[in-house]
Structures are given as C-alpha cells and as structure tokens.
Amino acid sequence: MCQPKNCISQTFEVSTAYDGMRLDKFLADIYPDLSRSYFQKLIKSGQIRIQNEPARKSGCIVKAGELVDVEIPETVSADILPENIPLDILYEDEDLLIVNKPKDMVVHPAPGHYTGTLVNAVMYHCAEHLSGINGEIRPGIVHRIDKDTTGSLIVCKNDSAHASLAAQLKEHSVTRRYRGIVSGLIKDNEGSISSDIGRDPKNRLKMASGVKNGRPAVTNYHVLERFRQHTYLEFELETGRTHQIRVHMAGIGHPLLGDSLYGPSKCRFHLQGQCLHAMVIGFIHPRDGRYMEITAPLPEYFQKLTNEGAGRL
Image 1: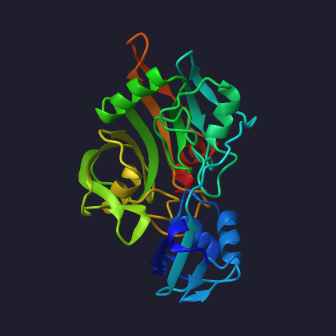
Image 2: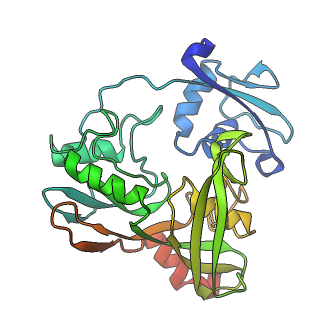
C-alpha cells in the first residue's frame, strides 16, 4: 500500500443501503467522480481493505456494518491531451462556449478520469483558446456540474471572460434553473430550502446539511407535475454549493430519482445517476454587458420519464 504522504486515506462504514453490493460499485457510488474501472485497479493493487484485510476481487460483496479502508493516490500533474469528442454546443463566440453536457461525462480530469472529460473535448474544439486561471488540469472551466447531471455549462476562452464569470458566480448573480424528478409527492406547489452545506465528516466526498464550517445554501423549487409516486420539479439556485439540490431534496425526504449517494441504492427505472438537468443558465456577457439566457433541451431519458410518467411512475 502507498505511503500516507502520497495517498488520501479514508474509512467508510457500509450502510444498510449498500448491503450486498459489489465492492467496486460501492466505491464508485461514494466517490461519484471516479469510475468502477479505476477502483478495480486499486483493489487489485491492494489499496482497498475490508475489515482490515486486503480486498483482492472487485466482485466481492460488502455487508452492512463492515469498515472499508480506501487509499487513493494524490493527483499528480498529467499531460491533458485534446480529444476529438463530439460536443453539443448551445452557444459560442470569441469569449465563451456553452455546452450541453451529457450523462457520464466528468467535467475536468481527476484520478481515473484523465481522458474522456469535457476538458479533453474543449481542448480539441478550442485549440489554444481557453482561459488558464484554473491551471493546466482545468483550462476554461469556471464552474462544474456532477458527472451524471446533464445540461448547460460555461467554458471560458480567455482569462478576461473567466474573471467576469467567476465574479458573477461569486456574487450569486448567475441564473441557474434545473429540472429534476424526486421520489414521493411534494404537497406544496412551491417552496424554499435554506441550510448550510459542507463536507460530510463521515464521507469526505459527500456533502451534508448542518455540518461545522458549512456555507449558506438556498434552493427554491416549484412543482411542474405530480405522478403517482414522484414529483417533477423546477429548481432555481440562489447559491451554488456542491451537490446542493441533491442534499436539500434528500434532506426533506424527497431524494432525486437515481441518486444512490443520497437516496436508495436501487431505482426501479434503472437510471444512470441522479435525474437532474441544468436547463437554463443566465449571465451578463463579459464583453458587451448584455444579459443572456441559454436553455439546454431535456435529454431523451428525461423526456421519456416525463412523457410516460403518468403511466409509469
């Protein structure tokens, strides 16, 4: 096993929601930005332990109450190469690019994801025209959305645009409206959730409400449609904390469909991650000062759920 100075070490207790799950899937669920194949390599190299014993098989089953020790090598500098990956471009000019990110695409490179990311794709598309404020591993990236969240995302082509958008995000003046389907029937037609969100002390890659050193977060929602056992919502964020909608909805007992990190580990619709789409993003253009709103159409799986919802949900 690697030395502590070169590794990030964490220990997790397997909850009942993960009882009977494959080890590699369990790890990919609690580390949503890392892939199962990446953890399969760590398992083979002896960097994953169950009950203080090395786990040698990715397919071994975890049981509720067991302790899983994880050692992840720290990120090292890597050559991030342009890749000819198709992009769904919603808007583009000399300063910025708005893309409609698909499911299962990581925004910027990380351990286990040095290829196939949005950064690899935009480096190919934009050549050398990307902002560098976030460094070599995240060129052009001013904000992010989760791997399995779809929708609109801004990429900056120069440092001036990056600084302008970063300031707007910091001031919470960027309009961000999401669509999502949650478990259960929400009684009120609209509401607002306000709570501090910070890193979960029991799972450093998970967020939680009401934790020490949490930051204020506000999510407004209104009901678009109710199905038999689920509710279709639009969300508008006043802040932009990591996993904000996912944490807030789980906190009121209505986790997003498919969100195995904050909700049930199994979903009857066999979804790939949470049912959440960043539909609208609005901001002041950094060059000419005009207000813009860009809308990302709902992905096919989402349209299918909503169109057939009355009969299926």
